[in-house]
Length: 112
Image 1 (cartoon, one colour):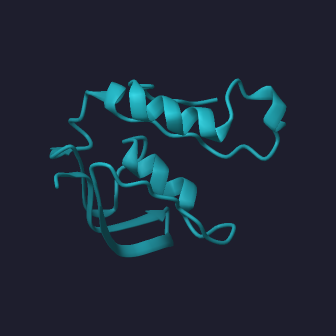
Image 2 (cartoon, one colour):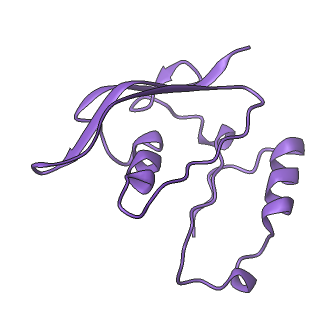
């Protein structure tokens, strides 16, 4: 099974504050993944790294076999960010609808 996300020994820090160090994992096609952890653990930072919005201090990230900095096929990628300030009723789809949509049609890069 092909890995669609590969994170290889990624470290990141904001200025001199380390957020995480030498994180490695992969996600194969067809797998569902949840990122959980305490406030300030680096979940949002990890997602920003996966989206190429931030660059790792060290290590590498590949999406569909391409370095994230060169990745262009964002229609293959979808995520729903948590927003504690937005009521769930304001979002135009339920989590179930988003998962079902991603199984049957490309939903692209979701942000709000």
